[in-house]
Length: 191
Image 1 (cartoon, rainbow, N blue to C red):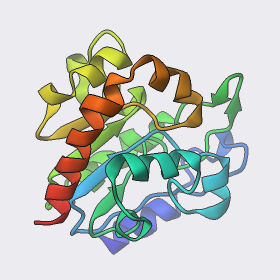
Image 2: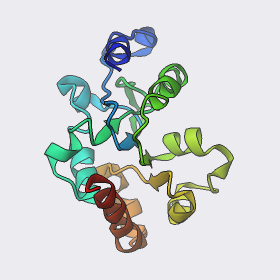
Image 3: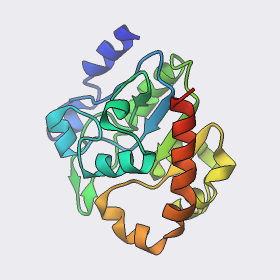
């Protein structure tokens, strides 16, 4: 496991395409029980090297109902984004995660995470990659159908402040989905 982490942290596969250069941000251990698969680190996380160290991360921890200590405990949470490095800025936010990371690293990581009881698929990139043909017509329909992906996966929108409009349009998410998410996470972390 340590060898794999060392390999990932020295990865330069995407170097020519990364405006700030490589800085793979990933965290896991052989004891990880929940895997968080999001998009890719933003510029703040690229600078700090700490996953979900931004407003999106604050929202995600609230959604999960966990403390920073639990969230950053690799024995509890593995953090394996679709792209491990900051992909750069696009017209309306960050660029999509580079595809090389998932293709090159995800299977190698996931086969070593033998204690995982739940995988959180955050956003469309993670959902498309892992659910393949099981995804619904759009993200909203996929998240509404979260129950159909349990017990292996829990699908979520991205907790970015950019999604505040989506949150306001979809109040059911806070009322119906988040309590189930917190219950699942709490149950796994306390057993």
